[in-house]
Amino acid sequence: MIWHDPPPCDRGIFSHSSNFLGKVCRVTICDVLTTNLSATRGRLRRRYKKPPIAEAVSEFQFRGASEWDWTILGLVYQEIKGEFPKKRQEKAFEINIAPQEGKIERSVGGSLSKMQFLREDGTAMVQVGPDLLGINVLPPYPGWEAFKALIHRQFDVYCRIAHPIGFKRIGLRFINKIVFPSKEIETTDYFHYYPRLPGELEQRHGPFAMRVFHTYEEERDVLNLQIGNLKPEDGNLIVALDLDYYLAQPDKLELSKGLEWVSAAHEKIENMFEACITDRTRGLFEEVK
Image (cartoon, rainbow, N blue to C red; front, side, top):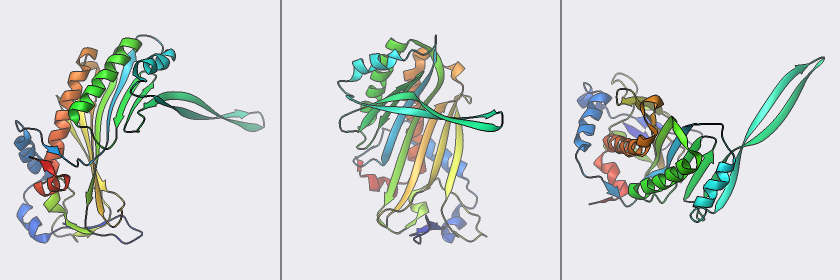
């Protein structure tokens, strides 16, 4: 499959290699992933000088023992302001339409939904709202050990102050932006996971987006994989590989197991990422041997 530089008004044109399709006509995406996921198990974690991570997010939605107390925001800030001194409000807007005699009344209102606490350089952010804790990091990605330590610190602070009793949802998400320094690529040289067209169809196509849900732990957890092209930048082709692992059955996880779940989620995401790409793609990230 060859991906060409798109015309100005388009987002991408792709073409499959007929020779490659002739070789893999009996192989499904599941076959390829099973093989590659097996290969990642037991292997040392790969490290890259230029990881393609555009954003990494860890989010906890809690079950509270009582109604949310807005003073929690200030208490959390007092604990973390040394590392996250900048504050930013995020408001939720509401539009209400109510029929009245002879007319319809509309009202627009807004209320605080959560607070965002940022580092001075803007590379990381902690978000706190009603029964919500989010931790975001932006490039340069600090590495998993540093990100995990950040998650642990913020989780401990929140739980010590808010006293949640359980989870509504947990999510760990890595959004990867893979930039190719060319106007054309052979897709199968770079990806194991991609939309495969039947050999009898025209192999050139326009923008693509694919979404697949993979279940784990007897369907307690779900990994939402999304892959698709983005608008080219400076003539370079770009593919987004978005891996969102979340807790689908929160009643099956105790609060005390939350951080353990995050570590396991990262392992699943990392294995999937490595299964989706080839060594040629890894070369773009400058793997550290």
